[in-house]
Length: 131
Image (tube, rainbow, N blue to C red; front, side):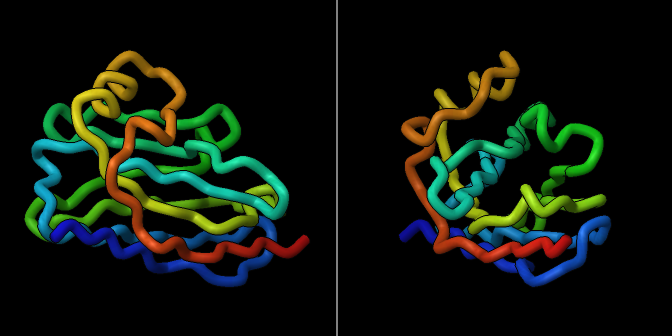
C-alpha cells in the first residue's frame, strides 16, 4: 500500500522558515516524482515544487523561486521542502503527491505540474504565515 506522510507545517511569522517532509512508503522515489502542492482558503490547489529523484530534475513555481528548495533523501525515501523568507500568501495546506512518467516528464520539461499527473496523495500539513 502506498502512503505519503506530509509533516512539518506550523505557524511562522513573515520572513521565517519551515521545512516540510514527505515520507513515502510502498513507493520508490527512484521511479517516481514527488510534488508539493498547496491550497489556500478559497483557492485552487496549485503546484509549488516537484522533484524527479532519478535524474535530479526540479521544478519551482515562479512565486517560490529563490525562496523554496526541494530535495530528496532516497535512502530515507523522503522528500523535503525548505521554505525560506515565507510570505503571508504562502499560507495554505501543503500536500505531497507521488506521480509516474507524466509527472516526471513535466518536471524535465519545466511545465507547471498538473494534479492529474499525480496518483498518490498525502493528507496535507497546514502552513500559516502571519504578517
